[in-house]
Image 1: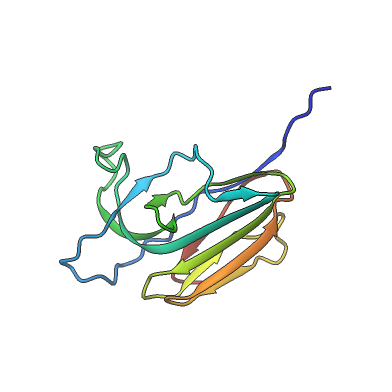
Image 2: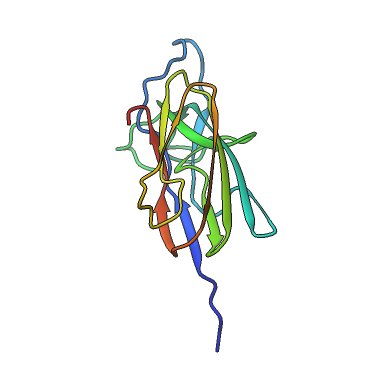
Length: 160
């Protein structure tokens, strides 16, 4: 009998549109379009560790240095997004893809000038509907088991 590995995927994460707190003359980094082909974080001994941050950027729906994927999509919109620490921002946010049963540990640092409310970084099914309230310049951790197979979302906004 052929064994099949069951995957649990947490994907699609972007912050709700946030008016930037930057000065108008400051150029924000571009936010990449994440194709969700590469899993984020580091997997070691059954534990996925992912360090992310929320910060401002300029959404560009297409390759970082290329044209937009569609002329109907507004380009270069200032917003907030997730990115792995030391890497660029992405929409959707960094992909968490692991086998069922993997322990996931996510650390998120808020580099915005507003409080961010993060949803979805929890075990599924999520009966507690845990929301992480992350004040400016704070870091919070979330740990959970990748229990129920499926594709799940995590997301954030500046209003609960």
